[in-house]
Image (cartoon, rainbow, N blue to C red; front, side, top):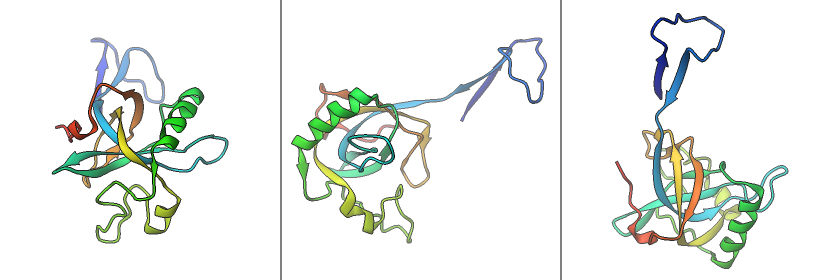
Amino acid sequence: EGIIGKQRNSVYEAGRRSGAWIKLKCVNEQEFVIGGYTPPQGARKHFGAILVGYYENKKLVFAGKVGTGFTTKLLATLYKKFRAEERDECPFVDLPSKQNGQWVQGITPSMMGKMHWVNPVFVCEIKFAEWTRDGKLRAPVFLALREDKKPTDVVREG
């Protein structure tokens, strides 16, 4: 998850935070293709999270839901772009999950009808903690839309 950096002569003080000890988290960044979004919940407008993936053997593979990193203005801007590219079918080859009864990132077969699918034409930059054992993103955060990269060039890195 990260490493601890400390001043040479400092001692650990249980229950107390100071600048003498800091936690440095390891972060990964990668481009992903947006294939859909979830409905908004609570006070949030436009959408709840984006559904992202990458290409493997010319097929779009689901990598996870990304629900943080958006400003109110960005939510509105992205939503307008998404609406122009909506489609009826899910673009991901592996949703809903069929892995031993486990649901992928909370997307069950019954929830599939509530998702909004988009043509896989948008590429975004995501930072995340790590890949989980089942190949999904842990703690993903949206950074930016990438208009300089073709979606079909996006593959899993590392």
